Image 1 (cartoon, rainbow, N blue to C red):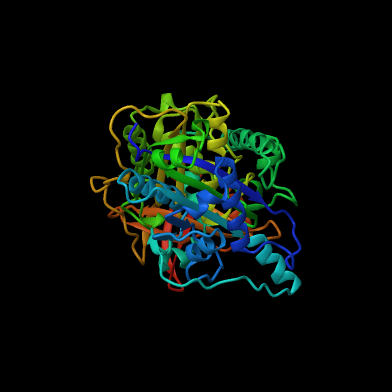
Image 2 (tube, rainbow, N blue to C red):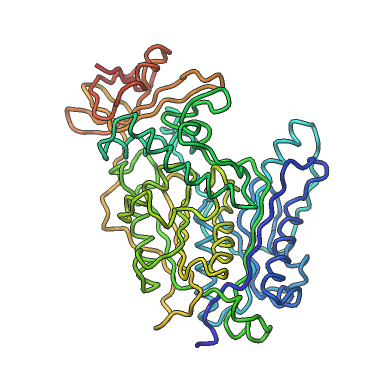
Length: 499
């Protein structure tokens, strides 16, 4: 075996539930703890951390550290030659891990520490209690950024209410439902059945934020505790971002693992990886709302690089911020949503927890545990940023890979269809491509959003429906994809009125 073969030797997770904000661990403390625990799990302890030539930190929301990797390196007594941070996006941890695998294989790194955390629960609790959080910041030097901080929405989308994941993902969900030919009730039952299985996994996960089994009906029925957020999603079908969680992994070369005396039963081999972005960055510009070409190409490229097929994978963790992210992965890879292997290792972002940009380090750490315990030989983990916009995938195995190393790379999607830019002002007969309705905290519908096409020239538009409660309540009672109506400019905004 080549001494530069990249392997993962340790992974650790941390869950801080309902801590007093005055006493809660701050970001750097959480990062240090999971780093030290990962090193202990590897069997090499502090000396492995001190030998790290690369330290990387996944972007931590609302933390103003100038150089988080330098701060972490100082805590674990490392003197890294390479320091990395990520941009925004749930795909970034896997992009980072794949990049480090490339660097280890090339001999540019030998011991790499990757860690990330989320402290939004403490932030919100502190704000509510009027507690000032004095988190350590600073860090000299400037780390290299992997990814970008580009925002996910444009001004037109924000104007009509497509401004956050909770409002955007439902437009993909409704389009995919119509594409599959499901009526509203059949679709609701299917959503419940899918995510019920996720809650069963979360209930067995010691690091899950909500380790509770919920029935399909409980997940999809709107109640005072499970209000509608945006049609067709209730609260229980949304990612839970307000958590305090952390995870970290340690990567080494085979030669470094041997030098540190790490037992071979700790070694998990990196087999392949890939990442890509949709040609249409903005969700409203996607050529087809029932497809994610970059997701399909990324997952398949990672499998090809690893020299395996999806049928050869034993453990699967699809990024799961909302049900449609899982459904789309199944659609693009030709998998049944009831696949007996399961589609999550953690319970997913709604139940295991959605710790900001860092979820896939949790799924990776869980995959490491499962592979070491003999729960399977090969694992596929995927990541997703913004609105099915950016994608990443990594294949791991408890066995060494035969054949030459194939580096992870960005997948070329230039052959995919061009973006479809919505017309700013639309007028005339039209048809609905997809839609959603946003709800207030009192459970009442507040805003209907339609993406459609004009009859005259096929131009796409974004519009709101009339802001009338009775109209909105009727609007969600029937299938509206394919529904006809008229769009007009009212008060400098497009207004769609169904026939």
